[in-house]
Length: 310
Image (cartoon, rainbow, N blue to C red; front, side, top):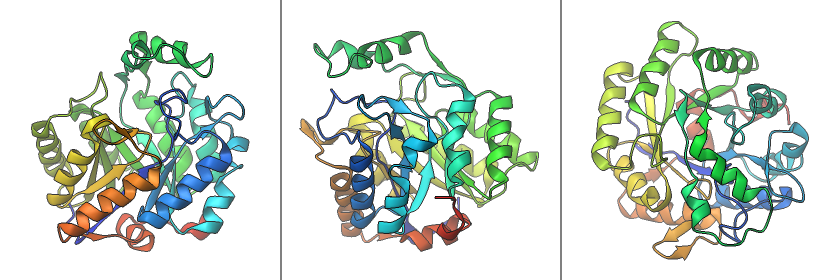
């Protein structure tokens, strides 16, 4: 793993997992997503991982026009790196999942590195009434759902997005996903420095145990040597412990309402910026420095904000 005295803080503003019922603070309108992203950047996030939502219902959207409602505002009001999802919403086709990133040509796009059972159905059992009719079936269907990222799908996504100079946040939900990434690296389809995001705590992926974090990092060290940066996220209550532990090992962190709607036990986070401010404060108290957006660009070899299409 490449060593740096600067910690890259990523913030996942709104994803495809949490629904409007789960938290009144989840941004669902374009104006809310844009404002939350800008505030997170001002709180210290160098990278903003962004999903869009459909107007009116707040359901996950892959439409470029829904991203166009907030991306120009984000770029105009802050200098953070914009990272567009290619995971999209659960059940979307590959064409749908790639559409926004192909249109926006961002500096960074997420790329899930393998298929997996992706089960968040347990959340539905904890809720008696939903705000929107799509929420309950969306959650419950994941009991019988595979998040598909075959080798052919990954190859197509990497090929089409690389044409615009977009680089990737490689999301690895299990150890095997690191070997999938090594396969594409060995074929010359991706080049270092790789930005690897370990994802811990999704039912169907690797469990949120600290031993697994150490194992994943050690495996990545064997596969990629010093040609990668390792970031991680812990879902739900594991968010902050995993972030701090990884940063203390020289790695990088991701927080945000996509991964956890809480700030601490029993207390909902009122914003993405609140989570960013908390991890920034903790890391600074541990004498760790926070990377600026331009420092993150230099570390990851990104093309620069002036070369995006929004």
